[in-house]
Image 1: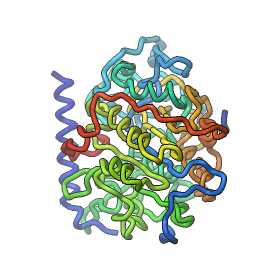
Image 2: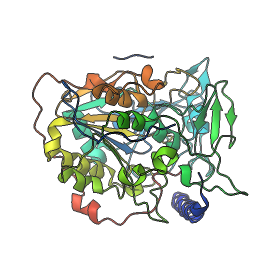
Image 3: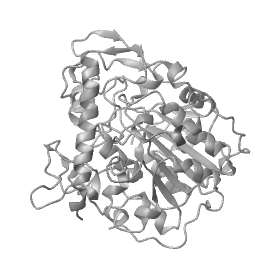
Length: 463
């Protein structure tokens, strides 16, 4: 009974916080290394530069899974079926369903689970966190020590066998979805030389549409280069820092960001990275480049309208979030199938990534490259006619590795952050031969199911 009650608590929390925030939005203002927005220019294009074979990069962002949680038993990958607890015990990971309970996956959860000693994570504190996005719903005990039954995520395993799987992609930070989604358009969340954004803003929605009145002002939290956590001491979440969008616009490369519905009372304003980017939110790009609902990506692909760079954000119920359903693998596969069956397939690279670890066990200590992280491992799939068949990349990646691949493909230059140090995902490709033919993915839920599905209205994640 407690499990069911926790689920209802989270759903009520989502509904109340979302509707309350949006009601007030009218007041809104302004083998690799270890190591103020520009206005749109020229007419966008999806043509690669001379010599490149990729004209489209599609980044599909799912939710809250560690690498071991999805690929613990994948042949040849760096997985584990046992884990360490804080008192030195070794416990077996339990095979479980995709839908489960929410766990602490904020910075506090990262620090507890990591149990850092001498700059190295011991990876033995996973039994010390709590249920709920910030651990507020009681001790979780051994619950984080689980992996998803491969039969429930068969499309992901099929893609890993046919294309490329990365088993050493680490989050940029040990934090939740807000910063992760910023990392996936920017590479880090630094706002100055000594401070970075961490965790979620004090109120939803994310970004420039957050509550902003004389009496109540939404704040962000900060992490300093000395490791100090400044709760709600950061700026209003509406920024003008450089993102990949600036580089794309400067070179006339088209981009689109697909999100759930943006109507009042819906969730498209939450878990929307570009709502926090002032030059996008308050320009024509908000309507021209931020597209809702997210299912339009299916019809746009069929109509030959796939942009040069595309981000796809799912509805909560299709996101693989523990509090969701079992439809996530089919949703991702339908996007892949749409591209695979289109003329765009021969010039496309699809990157499927999970934005944070969700509190679930992982056995690989994340390298600590700076005061931000890295955070824990998350899975990444590379699907492309040029992806190495059945390739498992052990290269150390971070989210900026994806951006670096995009930058290099179109000769965009660098954002000037973690993309400087990150290893590109280029080793997952072999561009010497002809593009491989696409083999459609079998799914439990059809394309029509998602096109008819009623939007949940919930944010993609619980924090």
